[in-house]
Image (cartoon, rainbow, N blue to C red; front, top):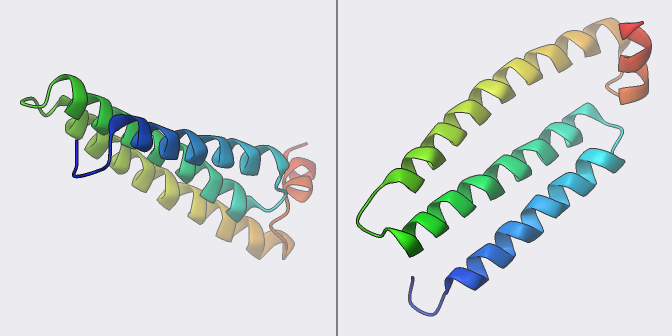
Length: 105
């Protein structure tokens, strides 16, 4: 792949990013840190698409297109989620998940 960096190395980093994101999503109580964890998960998937495409079909750009699509979806998701978190903060003066659950009922 790259000089000195193989597919295995990239997939290991991507796997670590994915599981750090899953761990953060499950264990955190702050809505912003949960949002960051979701971004880690999406970025690890984009890295997987690009790395595997580069390894299997180096002349085609399918993995890069999927990566750009994921980045676009992540940007839209962040914009909507941050707007919701700001609105929630204006109402409750807190951005903890437990308070958000109380507001939903």
